[in-house]
Image (cartoon, rainbow, N blue to C red; front, side):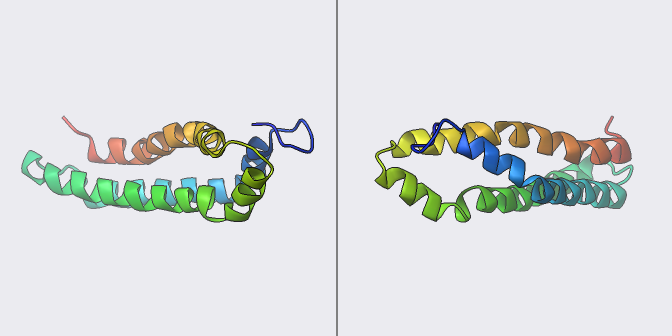
Length: 121
């Protein structure tokens, strides 16, 4: 999405500025995967439902954190951009498209510790 005052991609620039918070989110996901993997090490198949439930909870909470950072702090930017004539739908889609790599990387980071520790058969 182009900024009305120039030709910079403002949403992508904002994502690069939030590298420290992104790394903290990924560390939290890695910690959650390691903790659940250590708790459910070599669990039997009948305990697999509990592992799935806890995994869903851990991923949901960490995804909520990144979603709040994505849209929660940018309300003023959103209203400023929409008041200058930029389409609201295009702003929403641009923010979501920029978040796609993070959405893909986060489960991989989570599973990088959980999968070897649980060792599903």
